[in-house]
Length: 492
Image 1 (cartoon, helix red, strand yellow):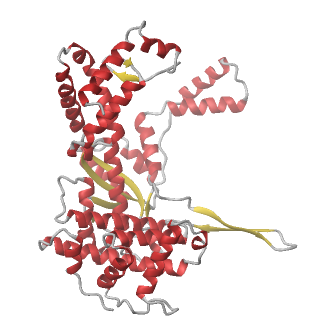
Image 2 (cartoon, one colour; image 1 turned 135 degrees about the horizontal axis):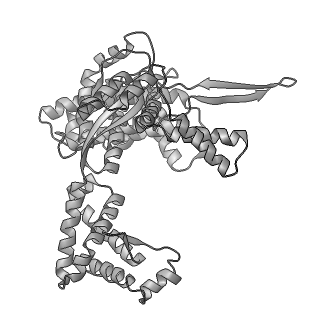
Image 3 (tube, one colour; image 1 turned 90 degrees about the vertical axis):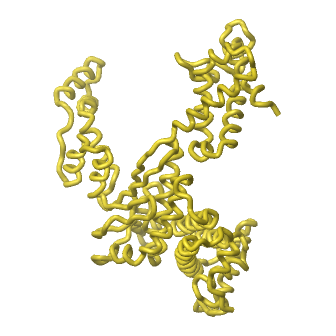
């Protein structure tokens, strides 16, 4: 395996060779494997042509440096680290080529890449539209770093963070209120028509399209922004606001969206079926209408049915506020776990391993609630509980659920006489059968067991995180078995 010094030498040698039009590397770019275009390294003025070998070496350097520097590995993703290393190398190319001592090249490059990587971390507030409550008046829901607020309060958050009102905000408020805002210039539209005629377009439809396009493109940027932002958020949607600190933009966005999903999964724990499947981020949402069935009786016309798959939880006045008020302990405990996702160095949980286990489990639980197919949901729910118990498989799941729910293992939980232990064992067996490719297991009727398993997982995750919060504040040891011992004993 080549050393870092050797990799830098290879990149430099290959790239400098490509600057000479008579070199074999340069000729291969014009006539060989790279034709018509080849790899380039960004530089001060344009870019430097190079070879695949040099680009592979750059990627290897970037990956090694990222993996061996813990704070950088957290704050920047692999692809961005590779691009940043390439950019820094291009900016340092002349200096590196003038350095006679090969041993000094890698330390110089390493320092600059790390400085650039750490400087790429920013404090970004991400706004994610979500489907939560519909037609409800409720105070903002705060779960750790995530604040879920109604649409009408969102613009105020933006204004507060900026320090003044943005010029596009009046237009958004006007559109949200059902009004209209002045569009582009009519003169610009007529000019577009004139230009279309000069190009030989004389059909009325083409001229009308030219008028509309030219008028739209002449809109003031604030009007354009107002229209775009007003369309982004549906009247029934809420906005999830989450600030992510010290990550570059793409990694920051990924972690922000993850935190929002985890906060909605936490809210899901406070809801009853089938409402758990009705809340989601816009990234998880499906079309509000879907074809339910197409059928035909003999001697009759085609029958077609539709179902409205409208997201969001609705109900009587005060429903949302009652849910939020009853879930304060849950939201506080879950928020402590979720905070470590967006700022792992600043918001360290007292029991980070146990907290991460809950975060992973509640993520699988949330995906299960959104699953369209029953067997997929059952498998995900079993995975969630297996993760939560620390990988102790069937026996560990049964014991953890019994301890947290207070349900005896031998207690009947289904109308067919199935006990808690039998339901969990049957579910775990199904997960194994599906994992090993059983087609028959996929087509078993599972809607009943899915519902009961979802309820068991919901109460288990709820009580786990609340107990974990008390346990960690009290100085509990960050270990699976010690935490399990702190729970009430399971009834046989």
